[in-house]
Amino acid sequence: MSLEDNKQISRRWFEAGYGRGDTETMTKLMPLQMLEEASLREQIVAYRTGFPDLTVTIDEQLAEGDRVLTRVTFRGHQTGDLLGIAPTGKPIELTLAEIHTIQDGQIVDVWNDFHPVRVLQQLDLIVGKE
Image 1 (cartoon, rainbow, N blue to C red):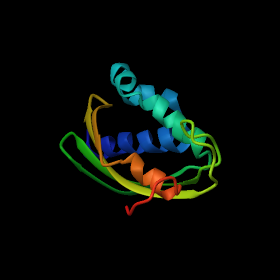
Image 2: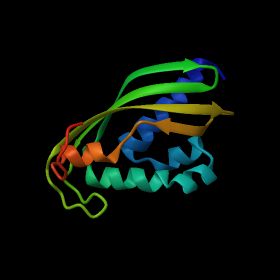
Image 3: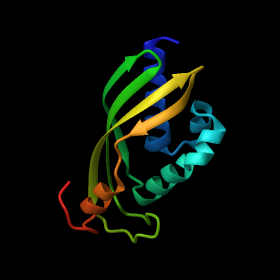
């Protein structure tokens, strides 16, 4: 696959999965065993429930070999239950970097710098600086 093909797979992961909660597309983009072991579908459903207006903006993508680095920003308001946390109505804006290793049209490895503490800080549920 070309570098552009790999970038498109990564883009679809964010836009379909996080952006629309489309878990069916996710199962096409990642081996089922990996999805299940990492509980990724459940995580995305939880965040889409907590932040029903969640938007995803792809800020930048870099590709080399079989890897794609995507810098992405998530924005939304917590108007739904988030893993037992009652709605706060507060907004969040999180930018993170995620690296996908892509083989045969699927994401076979994921690394990111997401820290749930940043979400809790923005919801004013814990004190601290980002």
